[in-house]
Length: 169
Image 1 (cartoon, rainbow, N blue to C red):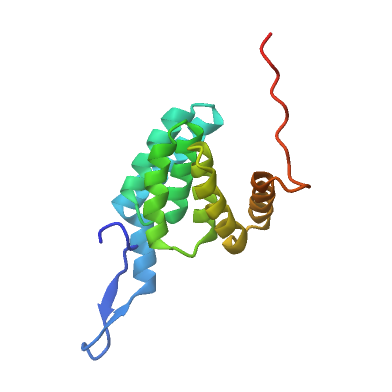
Image 2: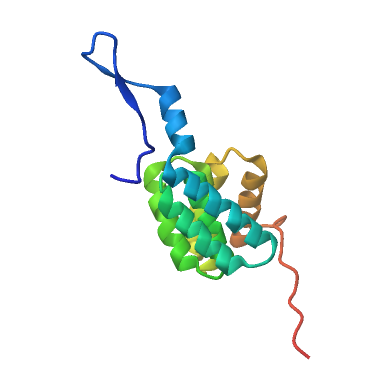
């Protein structure tokens, strides 16, 4: 179970017979724990690398950051997206598959899985993930992109078509 659940801090209740979550102490632990500080630092460095165009190195740092805080879904999604951008969709597939177990209803996981499946050139799995993305994601822009891509894959009119690729001369 290590890594699947975010750390929680408990304390004894006033009568000492029950354990209750101490939200303030949990928050303090999450902000100051060695793993979180390390993950935050690695993520910041990865984002700098992406900004400077070093996607492969950024993907490696994102993966190390995610290993430090594997319950951080947003970090895992960023790591998977970096893996796809660096041309390593197989690694991204592993990450997103693990994230799905943590929050199966989260739409952003389905959207990222669709991008992974597209990179793997698996249109049927991409379509299934796009449907979930379009139904569940809270980000309206991503939902519209998913719906547009679904129309494109099904060949419906009104779908965005990719620009033609110029033939080499």
